Image (cartoon, rainbow, N blue to C red):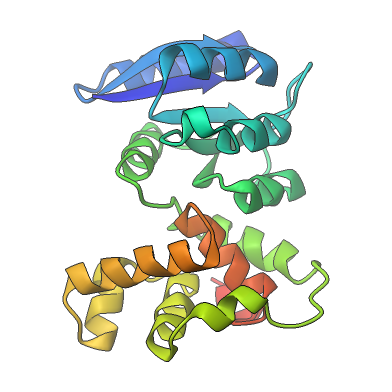
Length: 222
C-alpha cells in the first residue's frame, strides 16, 4: 500500500486529490497538512511513502518544507512530488534541485496524478511530461557554471554515457536498448552513478547533468 501525505493550504484541493487517490486499491491518504510546517510534523508521525507538496503556502512554503523533509535522516524513504499552478516555476526547479522526485500541475488529469504517485513510490523520478523537461531547460541555463562539476570525475566513460541518456529522458529500459545492455545492468549503472555523485533521486541527476554542462538545455526542447 502506497501511503500519501497531502500538503496544500486549500482544503478543496486536498479533498479532491484525496477522493481520487483513496479510490485506488493500492493507495491511501494517511494524513493532510495545510502548510509546510504541518507537513513536517505529519511526515514524522505518519511516515508516508509520497508527499504531494504545494509549492506556495503560508507559514512555510513548499520549497522550504521539501528541503527540510529531504534533508532529515529520519525521513530517508520519503519521496516528494511538487504541486504547482504554473508549469514553469523557479521554485519548482529549486525543489527538483533539492531532491523532489518531480512535479504535477494542479489541473492534471486524475490518471496522471495516480500514475505519478505510483511512479515515484517505486523509486523512479516523474520526468516523463514534456513540461518537466521544459522547466529544467528554462532554468538550468541560468545557474552560474564555472565548469564541469568535480563529482563527474568519479564516473567512468560508460557511466557518463548512461548519465547523458538519463538526462535526455530515457528510461532504464530505453538506456538498456540504446547501449545493448540488460535492463538490470542499466538500472545498476544509474544507481551507482547517483551514489558516486551524491544525489538521492533521478530528477537531481538530470539537473546536475544540465547544470554541469554535461548536456545542454537545447536537448530538452519537446
